[in-house]
Each structure stands twice: as structure tokens, then as C-alpha cells.
Length: 181
View 1 (cartoon, rainbow, N blue to C red):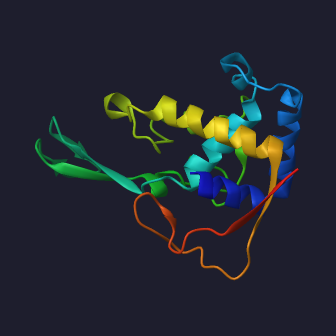
View 2: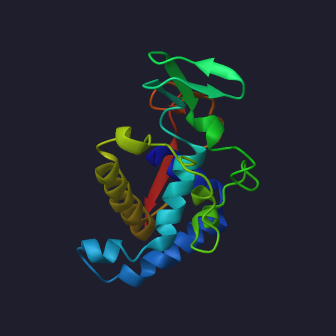
């Protein structure tokens, strides 16, 4: 996810600037507390938008526990169903302008991801949600806060950003030049 965070923020300097301004409140603090990390709502939205547009995995599987019918199709118990995370995260009936990088879609005023259950499933959902979700999100927030408050970066030219693999990442990696400031 760090790869995609760096890429999306480099591609969207207005989002980068806004995220950086939020971090300036904590500029003179050597060690951030859990309470202070809770005072970074814009960074939370940026990370949710990266999760939405660039999920680590594109899909998941679930076993059918109880038979049901869906749009006229009978689905028996015991079958395995595939759910498309990347497809779900780009549904226009859930997310306005789904191809656009827009952290404010997660603002308290909009909350697009809360219109329907399981609209944001980068870590799965329900009883099978990733057990490490809270840890992964906190770890990512710590790294992102450090990058935003201490570094500037640029994506180097002439590289392929075609994606592949699990986790979803650029096929040839991502070449970034970081500068301490």
C-alpha cells in the first residue's frame, strides 16, 4: 500500500499538500501518541482512498453456507463464490466518479462507502474480515505520517506502472526519489 500511497500523492499534489498541512500540527512533537494519530482525519481518508483504488488483492472467495437465489440464479450451499474487490470499489452506483482519486468521498458529509454494506472490502468484511486490519492500518498511518512530515518525493520517469501479483503492485516495482526536508 505504501507504493500506491506514494504514487497517488505524487500524482495529486493538492491532496499531498492538504495531507502535509494536517501533519504540520504535529511538527514539533518527537513521538506521536495514539491520541494524536486519532487527530488525523484527512490522512485516514487518504489511506481509505488508496485502499479503495489500489486494493492489495483484487478478489476473494467465500463458501456458501446456506442456499439462496440471486437475480434468478440458484446458488446451492457448498459452492465457492468469488467477490471482486477491485470491481466493487469502482461501482458508480456506490462511488461518484469512481476512477477519480478523491479522499473526501470518505468525509463525514459524504461517506460514500457507507451507502451499502461491504462497499469497501480491501480487508474483507463481516466475520471473515482480516484479523490484522487494525494493525496494518495503524502501521500504514505511522509510515505515512512520517513520510508526509519529513520527506518530499517524486516518481521517476520512464517506468511501467502495469500491475501484477499479490499483493497488487507495479510489475517492475516503483522507482521513487525521496528527499529529506
